[in-house]
Image 1 (cartoon, rainbow, N blue to C red):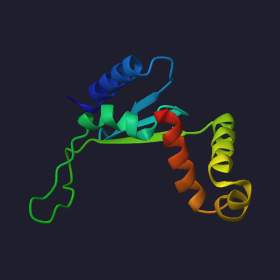
Image 2: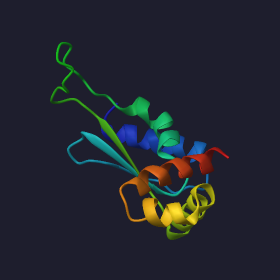
Image 3: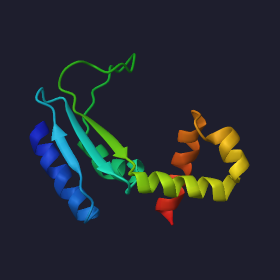
Length: 125
């Protein structure tokens, strides 16, 4: 199965599994990768469970380095809408308190770690 065919199958499966969610599934011209983009839910983990079977990556048996040629990578990128960002912020404040959010989480690298954790919790509920 070539990359274009894999992208078509991914589109079908994602549409079936997550009706109502708009996914952008594009294969690269060189044939080595498939890029998937969507907004808000589902989580990257949920999408990866469906799409990882379409990856084909060859590794060297001794060094475990990725070998050149014949690989198909699937990249998944989830974008958050402004509404989702606000909901995540509200949940972070609810969970950790406004002082902790303002002093430690907001505008730091840790924001993404905490935000992803809360986002995943929201999806599981």
